[in-house]
Structures are given as C-alpha cells and as structure tokens.
Image (cartoon, rainbow, N blue to C red):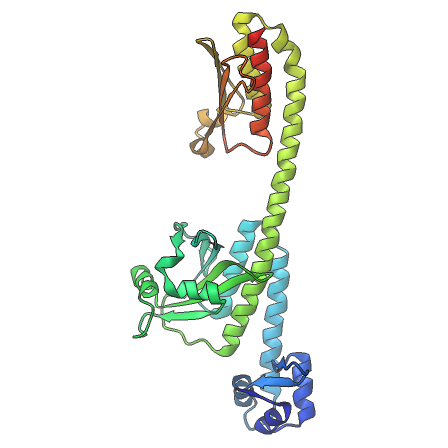
Length: 355
C-alpha cells in the first residue's frame, strides 16, 4: 500500500515538509504518480517509524547514511575493476560482507538457450571454489522466475513451502539459505547473483534486500563493461599478433619461392609455424609430408599446463590447384585473423606445389 505525503507525515509524527525533504534526499524512498505526486510504500514508512522510535529520526538517518555510503563505496570499487576475474572476486567479497554470508556465486545467463553458466564461486574469505558446470533453467523453476520476472528470492531449507529443486542443492552442499538476485543491465537480464548462508536460515530485512538489488545492478553494469574491455583488449592483441605474423610471412616469401621441390613442404611448414607462433605444423601434398616445430613447442617440453589446451587447425589449398594440406597445432584456439592467415599460406604453398 502506498501513502501520500500527508498520510506518511501523520504516521511518522513529522510535518509534510520533512517528509518531502526526506524523499528528495533519498532518505525515504518514494515513487511518483503520473501527475507527479509522491507516494511512499507503507513498509518503508514502518521501517523508518521503528528506527525513529519515540525519540527522533537520528538513528534512522544514520542507518540511511550508512546505506548510501555502502552503495557509493561499492560503486567505486566495482567500477575500478576492469579485469573480469578481479571484478568477480570483488563482487563476491562485497556481497558476502554486506549480507554476512559464506558464499557468493556469479553466473551468466544465456536467455536463448535457457542455460545458466557459473562464472565464479567464492567463499567469504575470498577463496575461489572449483567451477561448477552449466545448468538448464528448466530444471529450477524458482531460478527461472527470478530471471524472467527480475525479482529477488530467498530459499531456506527449513521452509515447508520451499522450492524443492533449490532445496535439494542446498542440502547436498550442507547449506541453509540462498538469496538470488538477477543481474540486469540496460533492461536485459545478463546473469544471476547468488548468496549462500551455510549456518542459518535467513529472513532478510527490506533494507538488506534493497541493498542487494542495488549492488546487483552495479555489478551487472561493471561486469558488462569489464567484458567489453576484455574483448577490446583481446582484439587489440589479436591485431598486433596478426601484423607481426604478416611481417614474418612477408620476410619468408623469398625463401619459400627459392626452395627446392623436395624441401618446399618443409619450408612451408616452417613458415606456418613461425607466422602463427605454433607448436608444430605438418605440410602434406602429393603423398609426401614434412613437419616443423615452433618456439611454442617448448611449452610442451617444459610441461606447461597450456599444452592440455592445444588446438589443431587444418587448412587446404583453397584454389584446388594442389592437394596441399597444413595441419597446425596451436597452444590455444586461433585468434582473430589466424585462420585466414593459414588459408593464405596454404594458397601460396599450393601455388608453389602446382608450379
């Protein structure tokens, strides 16, 4: 139920002017009608009335000021984190401290596929927990409601009316309570924020839920910006690598052209390795083959863990003038332009084979 300024003033025992001042400064939340009149939620008035008590509104004002300080401090902290991993850790730290909870998970939501991907899960000490796999939204009705209707929801395992799918996960992990809030950016739901209390069931106050929603909104904007920054940084890096690869390829063209027929395959393989900073390359044509190793092969020799993420990329002479095939092993998936560059090398090599 929403009350007018006059009704709120009578309920709080203050003048309408004081109520208007409180709403103008954000001390007392309010909404406005189509005609511009202030309307205050009765529950906010009751919260403020309890804080004021029989003395004055100083205690309530201090509580509101602390809430504002938390939001400003959190906004600055999140906005300053441009690295996605650091940002996720900061979000989790802020949420667990704010709500006095034990764990916080931040997830990404693929609305088209109806799948939630957990980006990171942290405990209250800042320790990152092992990543859990994605899950289908259809298996968790309450989570679906949180994301689709953009509302917060609380799950307590001792609630007889609890959502059984969510409660089963809590019981499995030995947890007692879960608070879920959607991550909304520019009117799009981009993810989910989950805060877990391992020791007790929780009944969050309106102030705590209001803070949770506000921080979730800040987190959504910060996460969106951090991802844009990461994409831009990755793109700049890819372009720099591509330019370096083209310089390498340009400098090696004379050697490829001058190579004897029996050494041509090996030379093409070496060029592909060097240009793409590859682990290895095998070039084959006309029933013959030759290989080469690049500097990245040292990662495998040294037991570098990146070796477990090796990617095989295959290119064939696009002109069809030869049956030249290049099989290149990269330490990581091909970056922007690398696949096209390999096609160019295959085309040039194919022209040499045909000659």
